[in-house]
Image (cartoon, rainbow, N blue to C red; front, side, top):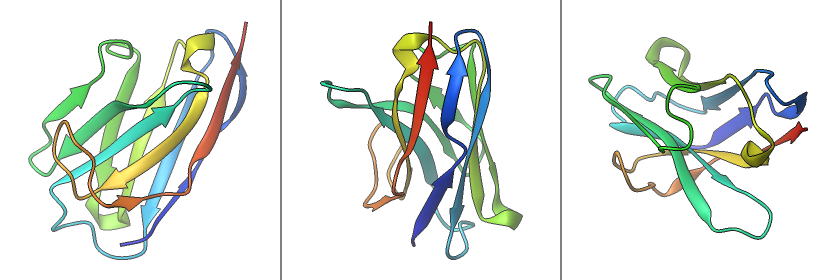
Length: 117
């Protein structure tokens, strides 16, 4: 499945953004969907994942601020990001086909989120 991410941009600290990722085909049979990010000079890290039954997993750094959701009817996964911090600045990638803690083989193209202080 091909993934197309959107919704990144420039926001001030404390602000909000909503990322969207739409798949080229049905995501109904895909167990895990997720968001990962890569900050400048750092390794890629898990942000959040959601599996079919709705169980969610979050990195400690985003718990209570970010919310992942999926809409199987729209073949989409979302990441609502609130109370953004400068350290959230990164390229965010959506992913499909992995597990709660590991990515699958399908990646979106990435969308840049920049949080200014």
